[in-house]
Amino acid sequence: MPRVKDHKLAEKGGLKIEWAKAHMPVLSSIAERFSSEKPLKDVRVSACLHVTKETAVLALTLKEGGAEVCLSASNPLSTQDDVAAALVDEGIDVYAWRGMSKNDYYRAIESNLSCNPQITMDDGGDITVMAHEKRYASNILGGTEETTTGVIRIRSLADEGALRYPLIAVNNAETKWNFDNVYGTGQSTIDGILRATNIMIAGKWFVVAGYGHVGRGIAMRARGMGAKVIVTEVDPIKALLAAMDGYIVMPMKKAAEIGDIFVTATGDKDIIKAEHISLMKEGTILANAGHFDVEVSVNDLELMALSSRQIRENVKEYLLPNGRRVYLLGEGRLVNLVAAEGHPSEVMDMSFSNQALAVEYLVKEGKNLPPKVLPVPRDIDEKVARLKLKSMGIEIDNLAPEQERYLSSWRG
Ligand code: NAD
Ligand code: ADE
Image (cartoon, rainbow, N blue to C red; front, side):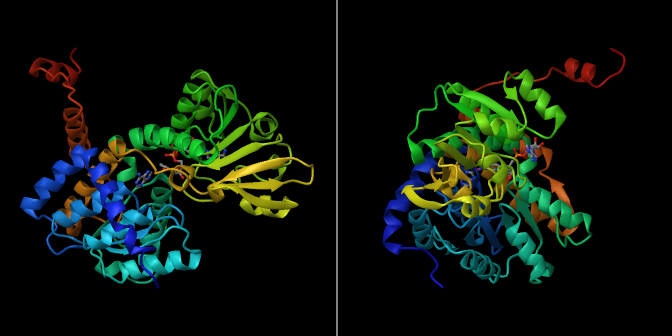
C-alpha cells in the first residue's frame, strides 16, 4: 500500500508547514518546552487526524517531545498531499493520501495501529473504535478525541462498558469547542464554498441545518457576507437561540423550497434527503460541514438523478427528473477540509495546544485515570487561553483578594 501520494511534493508541503507554524504561537511555545524537557520520550502516538499543515505542526511538536508519531487520515478526502510528503521527511510515519478508497482508509488506520501505540489521537472516533475491535487497547495508556461526533461515539462505547482506556474529550475544552467549532468552521466553511463555486453570497437564501457550535459560526459568517440566513433545528432551545439571534427558523421541508445554499452541521444523518431535494430550486448548492458524509444523502441524490457530471473541481451537478439541477460540494464530505484548507492555523493553535498538553497529561497520569470519557483538565484549558491572549498582545485584569473572597462567600 502506498503511504503518501507523491514524495516530490515534500518541498511545497514543508513551506506550508512553516507558514502554519508561524501562525501557531501557543503550540510553538509548547514545542520549545517539549524540545528541552522531552516529556514524551519514547512514547508511541498513533494519530488519526485530518492531514493538514496544522496537524503537521502538532505531529512535529509531539516529536520534539520525544514521541514516535504515526499518522493516518481521519477522512479520505481531507489530506493535503504535499504536507503528508513533507512529514515523511521529518520522520513521521504517514499513511494518508487525498482520494483514498474507503478500504484503503481503514487499512491505513490499521497500519497506523500496528505502530503499537501507547497513545491514540482521534478525530471522529475511527482509530479508537478500531483499537477496541482489533485488540490494541490493552497496551494503550489513553487517547484524545478532537471532534463532537467522535466524543458522542466514544461516550456511547463507554456507556456500554466497553471503553478500555481513558479518553480525553479535547473537543469539549472551552478553548476548543467555543473557537474551533464556531469561528474556525464558520470561516473555513464559507472559504470551502467560495473556492468550490466562486458564487456570490450576498442576497442569497442560506440555510444552515443545526444551530450548535458549528452551525452558529456558519450562520454568523453567512449573514456577515450579506446572506439571508434560515436555520433548521430539532432542539427547541437552540431553535429559540437562533430566532433571538435574528435568524429565520423553520423546518427543512419548508426551507428546501426557499434556499439557494444549504450547509448541514448537525452530526446527524439524513438531514437533506430525497423529499427535500425534490422541492429545491434550480441551481441549489448543497454542502456539509458535519464530520461524516451522512448529512446530505448522497445515496438519494445518486438514485434520483437522471444524470450527473463533475462540473468543477469539488462540484458535482445532478440533473433531477423535474428538470432542475442541484450541485453537491466535496462529495458531501466536510466542505471546509475538502474544498479549502480547513480551519485557519490561528484557531487550530488552541485546539492542538490542548491536544499536545492532553497527551503530556495522559503520559504522566494515564495509569491512574479510569477508562472513561474525561474532560481536558481545567488548568490546561485556562493555560491555553492565557498563552493565546499573550500571543495576541491582550492583557486582562486579575481578581483582587477581596473580590475572590466576595465571589466565594454567601455573606455578600
Ligand atoms: P453541537 O452538538 O454543538 O451542535 C449540533 C446541533 O445539531 C445541535 O444543536 C442539534 O440539536 C442539531 N441537530 C441534530 N440533529 C438535527 C436535525 N435532524 N436537524 C436539525 N438540527 C439537528 O455539535 P457541533 O460542535 O456544532 O458539531 C456539529 C458537527 O460538526 C459534528 O459532526 C462535528 O464533529 C462536526 N465538526 C466539523 C468541523 C469541521 O471542520 N468541519 C469542526 C468541528 C466540528
Ligand atoms: N479540522 C478543521 N480544520 C482543521 C485543520 N486545519 N487541521 C486539522 N484538523 C482540522
